[in-house]
Image (tube, rainbow, N blue to C red; front, side, top):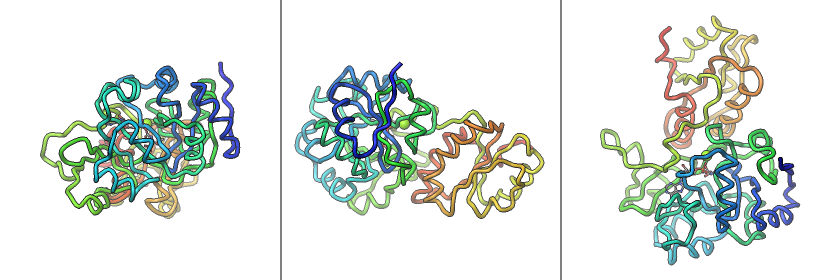
Length: 340
Ligand code: TXA
Ligand code: MG
């Protein structure tokens, strides 16, 4: 078994050296921690799938430190791609682009003729990529199926002994993974909602961006391959409580103290019995998104309730990204669905 080393931000030279040798190093981003390997080293990339237990048909994001690093694989960038990079990079937007045939290995692209590129907003990681001088594949650094990691400790919990190291830069700030936009299709399409919203993308692109919201009643277009897998699921059944159901849900929790845990905004926790385990989502949707994955992990590690009642939010702005992840964790179960 490997000893997994924790690197401080001032130790990235050492971490970059390991990456160049084909080792796996987890790195911080503003969204969630990523599991890094040299994207140009097929053997190293294959070991990322093994370490995560990830299905091999699920392509990986290519994490870069500059626009030029992308152009190496795509050739000249479209106006749209350039506009998005100029506005949102470094930041929480992943852009799917056509690549030159064979420019990246099948292990990275899953055999697609496109690749997903992202420049994260984290100085340590941008410096790490520059130092390694190669793009890094960067799936979330969790075991496949578990909530994405928002601290180095989460990564250690899931991947200790399977990876060479983790660069620890503290808890992530956004907390949910990047927005993915596909520019390889006729109409720009959002494959996964995140901090960067459809409205913001439309403003910059000056054209309609297809997202779930616009597709109501239509046949679904294929999404990011990874979106079809079960995700973010803790051992307990997660149940989403919309704001109007909150009082009823509290009564249910008080009647089932032994089996239930509650994740909610600080103000809503005030009325929960002290006998019930709780996890605070803070003050608003921003803090709730930051803490969602940590909350789902919290109860797995300690109290193991049967049911986690978790606050739902309106599906607007960051709320769309939060609800996308929470619905997956809950298997779409809402409190109103419970037969009680
Ligand atoms: O915020 C994030 O994006 C984090 C941090 C670490 O950068 N990364 C992340 O990676 O969430 P991952 O692998 O957990 O999710 C990437 C998603 C998967 O659903 C995958 O199927 C999709 O991106 N994807 C990758 N390449 C693609 C492509 N060429 N076309 C469509 N979807 C793609
Ligand atoms: Mg993931």
